[in-house]
Length: 193
Image (tube, rainbow, N blue to C red; front, top):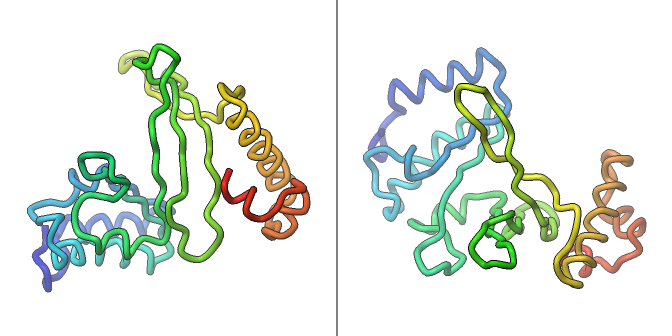
């Protein structure tokens, strides 16, 4: 961890060199807490120092993703300094969904909470799927779009979501206006999905 006002650590410089040499397109920090080092995520100056390294990566054309948790009590706000949310281009909230028994997690809802330079995407309904990575290591879990809805509202949202995905996949680079026209929805109804 490099204190505020200092240069990057040798490890951070090593990662920057590796990313540049190998033309890495995405760097994921999973989680902020695990990668924050000796700093205090509640302190503005420490968070700014942490984000400085990610901004350097972004300046090299590398996309960055920081996995972070909400504060206790599910307030919908990230833990720690508000600098993180302020600096983010996009904030995506992932909430678990449960089977009718109320105990078995079977998927999640993905929502765009902030989209700096564009329209936020609508709600995505996802299901958990086990995926065998390696016979010695067992399996991992991946998320896939849900094929069926559990409520009437979900069914309507999924129908719109599927129309949007079909259109976007077959019309790369489509404008938002053409997407709205294609799904025959009002701008607000498509964004709220």
